[in-house]
Length: 239
Image (cartoon, rainbow, N blue to C red; front, side, top):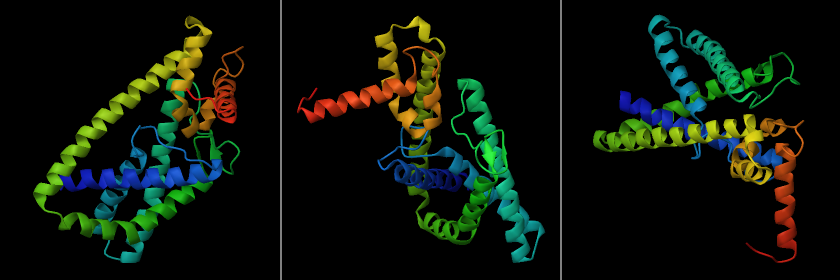
């Protein structure tokens, strides 16, 4: 049972990353690795899916009517996932002193962390998960031999621990760079910012960091870097 949930977590984290990446890439018209982790996984989708699945099991035990079970599950799932999104956004802002996403311009938002539109989207995704995706994935996972599932689960556990540690260390190092920018030379600061370009592209809201600090504006540094690369390509120069 635990092994199955580990596989579900990995699977839905990957599906979430695909959805986020397609959406972000379509908006910016270029490939964007839309995730906190280095690899192709977005854990908030994995955690959310597991919560929804467990909630469905719990509701099904006490409620015999299938339609009422579905309605209860979607409503409670929407509430839980929205709460998880709020907590995640709040903690990230407290750590980095900047929002990683901001829904302040959206209708019925709460402090920019959550909003009505995306809560409805969570509800739609919960419905799709319960009615379409999970029944298929459940059958697929259950058909795998137990030994195969165990090896795959162990691999993903080791991978997630490693990727989470590396990504967390990188994010904390970025936090140091942003907060203690005055301790670094301008060239060293620019080098560090460019090193974490992937995170800034994945979460454009972070581009406003140090916006009011002379020569330390993240957006200007990254734009300058991009222009420099374009100029090199234009004249046929290569590193």
